[in-house]
Image (cartoon, rainbow, N blue to C red; front, side):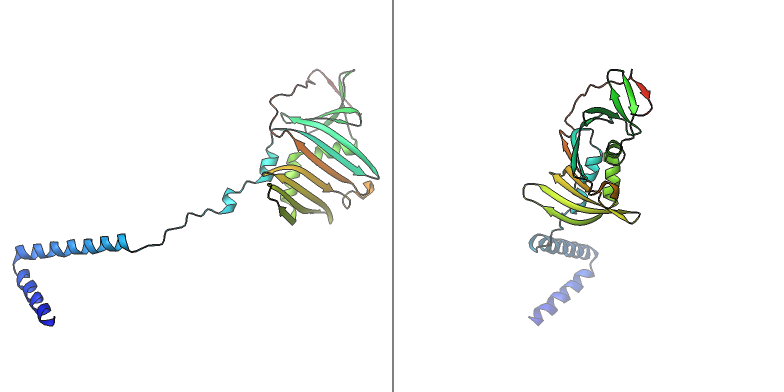
Length: 231
């Protein structure tokens, strides 16, 4: 075996002295190199890079979806001092239209008015519940509150439901929130104001949303109504 190797080496040296044979020898060496490389690439298994995508990048942000709702119907249930009151309304085209204690109200977020359809007047309202429902319980304010809150507990269910509990703290007073999602959409929020508004006892508000982004038109026109002071 050693003798054969010596003979092969001697022949290679003799061929390398001849320019033409040397070129053929180099070409053969390169062909052999590429052939061996090809065999290695084809036959030897290589790890396949994972195509895993972070869950966070694909996760639907339900709070953003909530704040960008274009229309919905809603019920706000206020429980305080042993009584229960409801606001039932519709949100459409950046306006809130609702009924509370038999009265009709309208709001563009800047102000909230009691509607007098007989006199065709919009009377500025300072009622606590009415003002709370517009100033603090509109979707933009609630988005800010949720994003500024601390997550306390979170539960997810097989049917796509998710319940998250949050605590919001401001001026050393806390507001507790429970958010219920269905298929990545917020459909209910329960807010406990007991510590925040002690004058109203154990004030709790349940917000329920229906027909989210499902309204194509809503006809309420107050353009010819006169705005007056106080309701």
